[in-house]
Amino acid sequence: MLTTIKKWWSYLTAKANKSFDERADPAVQLEQAIAEAQDQHRQLREQAANVIANQKQLELRLTRGLEEYERVSANTRQAVVMADQASASGDADKAVEYTHAAESFANRMISLEKQIDDDKQLAFAAAQAAEQAKLAVEQNGNALQARLAQRQQLLSQLDQAKMQEQLNAAMTSLSDTVGQDVPSIEQVRAKIEARYAKAKGMTELSGQDVEARMLEVEAASRNAEAHTRLDQIKAQLGIEASPATPQVTSGEPTPSANDSQ
Image 1 (spheres, rainbow, N blue to C red):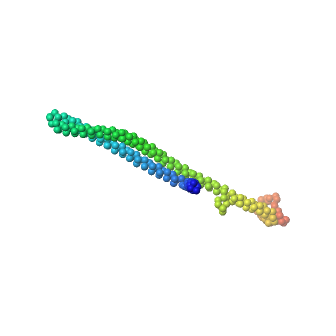
Image 2 (cartoon, one colour):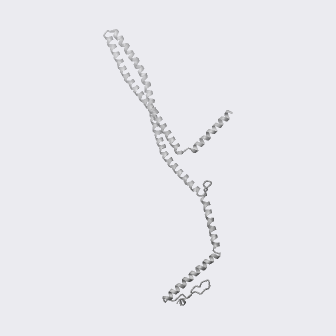
Image 3 (cartoon, rainbow, N blue to C red):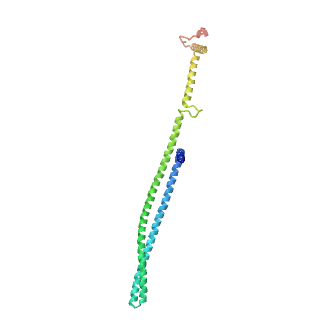
């Protein structure tokens, strides 16, 4: 039972992650990635600064150790000289005291020598670590700059992708039905062509009926009258009339120029 629950949980988690990735805005995700990279770079710089600070502290301690060693060494030599002088002057007590002081200084020199050797090794290792830290910060800084440059390129590509998607959607809407209530351009074209074809058919049919013939007779009559009037005007002006005057389809004679006189 526990195994089944784990499987279901893993499945639901994977499904939720897939759904999130599909719906997430790439621009926002890109900004998140850049912000995370910048935060990592700041942390790396802080760590590198701590490494370099440790190196500086070790160098200061080594410098102090060397200075103290020089001082103790000088005191040791001075104590030996003073013990020898006291012995030569016959002051055995002072000679013993100076000898003990010289021994103490010598022991301190031995301890400092060991400490200085250890500090030298630590300082050398710290110097190497500091150089590696500087190099890591420099490399990571270059990588961060490259990511920032890539961000601009990716944002530009994202804008182009969005524009292309809108263009594709607009082109698709020219041939596909948009929703349930909006017809496509092809459907509207087919409807208009059908109405136009029907109107043309009705026009052809109406051209064969009696009303069309009556309109033709009236037009012929008007044309005959116009020709008659022109002949009359020409006769008045002394211009020879047309050899043939169109007749009215009703059968009545058309008045000539002589009749009008």
